[in-house]
Length: 260
Image (cartoon, rainbow, N blue to C red):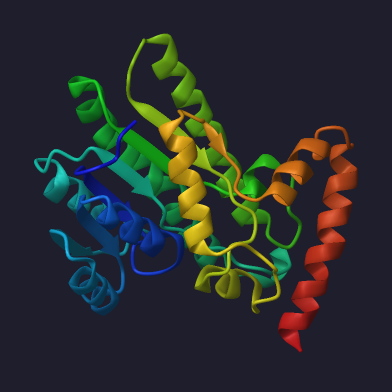
């Protein structure tokens, strides 16, 4: 799969992994459609990239905004869709507001699902293209106490994407669909989700470089970082309750740190 000179739509493009994808695709001569809430950051990024960019500020936690983006972009012959927008919230279930969790579900799940459904027919009709849904290594684990809703949304993304990839394979489609499942990546997202930059993660640039390499090879589930890949592999041999207990202890400590 050659990503040069394509039309690429990236959500969550104003920072972190989304911004790193924008820079990586710009380096390949791609034209970009950049979507995120922060208009000022999108325009600043577009001004740096040196390739044609359309800036679409939108709050994708709102369905009408998701549909508006899809409608605007539907005639622009999108070749690659990078569903990167998302966020997480750390805390005990009893302490997190329902409205905040529903917003997370709307952004992490509904927006991604809608955009995938809107652009998939275009890609299958022309017999080429790619959709990368940014999940998380969290989505490959059985549970995530103190990040319950986040883990659940990413499990949805990982499962939905793998199922769709198999369907396309059985249909003989040349359209690529994959799930990017990183562990800790040093972005503003880490701070928003957990309250501090406590994780020793890879950079967003490392994550994206690895993702593009594996996308080109048709890898369905992409896990950047050797230690995270090893952890996910060995987790298969542990009882689900054991994993949940370990994660609860690990993440509860971060809840306490965040409160201090």
